[in-house]
Length: 433
Image (tube, rainbow, N blue to C red; front, side, top):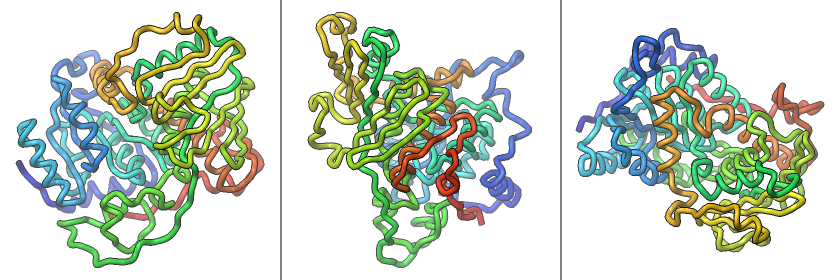
């Protein structure tokens, strides 16, 4: 087990800083990772690097490493205690790996095929972009971008570099949600008219926690932890996961915490993966979007997402979605179950695996690794991510501004609303020096 400390490499930092501003396309992509006419795509072991070792990583990585053709050879985190925990886990279960404080050193390695990015939200876009530009395929946790601009930049770089990308919206790979979408797309519900997505009640918190002494970078690299987020004074609670809910660190006033999943499934059911609603209007209990085809997208605010959810079938669990047509409805949630409006529709359902819940990532990661080998498109590829995330961000801005917004999906901008368009991006701090 090796822990590499950060060593400044001027050329790499210069390129990294330029990448975060201009997103330049690399001139060379390793044939070993891409596969071409003379070099087969990887058919055996896929080597994986991990960026961010918090609770989400600890939940997902075991499922990823359960695939026999995947080996984690490097991990990076800015916190020493998380590196120590990762070291113990990897030595006990997978023979160890190399650890880094600065993920840029991990990305310099040419023996890594793909990366799993499980940092806080603020890092998902820049880390994904730098990874793609370093020739790595990318599985990024959601939300994949703090802003509309982040998501646009990420999708553009993935397409320019030809990398494989998977957003961590794993419900696309689970049987009950797949069956619900299939029913909606098949016409067996009749003509679709309303899609229902459960989302967190939005909030904006711009407060700061009380200042504490900044640790030595070897314990917590506070500058690198903040990354592109605005500077603020250190507090231990931030790095222990209590950054959530703070506007500087969070996506779309928290609407994307569930919306990145549930709105994404509604997009899929409406066969709208290449577009999004064109109008958004926030109310007291939710936000309504309207597609060009007349279908409504209703995003319902949930005061207590993990408690009672009025209007939903409780036993279906968290992250419920409901698709309604003029001849019936279907609803699915994280329990792995599915409910429909009639006996006739029940006859259309195949038997579901009882153990697969909305938190199960094994099938979704398998889809990613298969595409790393085949160079195909994943289920939650960059275009799918872009349109579902933009729908969430546009809805959140309608709530933030307190007015109806109209959006042009082709230009990816709001119509006749300069203030909303200015909020498509946030200033990014220069974290690289």
